[in-house]
Length: 156
Image (tube, rainbow, N blue to C red; front, side):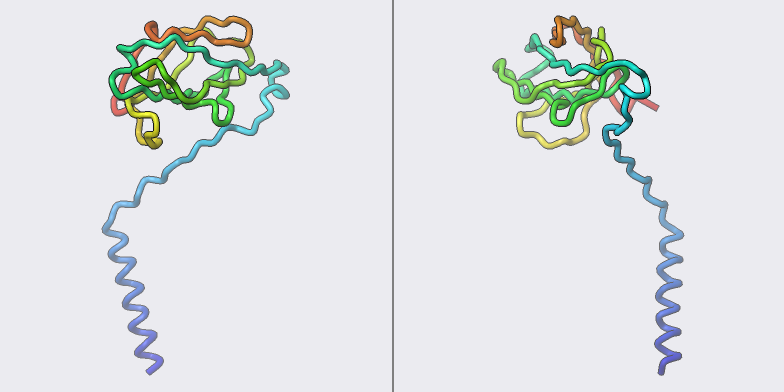
């Protein structure tokens, strides 16, 4: 009886391997988290916190609203909850842009999509590049001057 059970288990296990071999392996999903590198230590440059101050543009925001996610890039890195901002069609907003920078950037990139305030973190549309005017620790961003880049599905 033991031999029969062992043989049946072996057949089931081999059958599962045969089925698995015929299916394409799922692509691994890569999760990116903010780096824990001490940028001040390795560059010798002091990081400072900057806050985004936006001048909104109703054409860019649209009728639903606009969600922006800050895209990290030297000389700046996003700070915790300060990388997502939603702008509503009635000059309201939710969230703040808070980034740590070696120096004030002259432009920054966002991932964007049109959605309501409480929308989940679904796939965004593409990239938005905005010029920045620094005034002390404030980064003034006139959204009417932002340029819409390629949609994500256009990148290879």
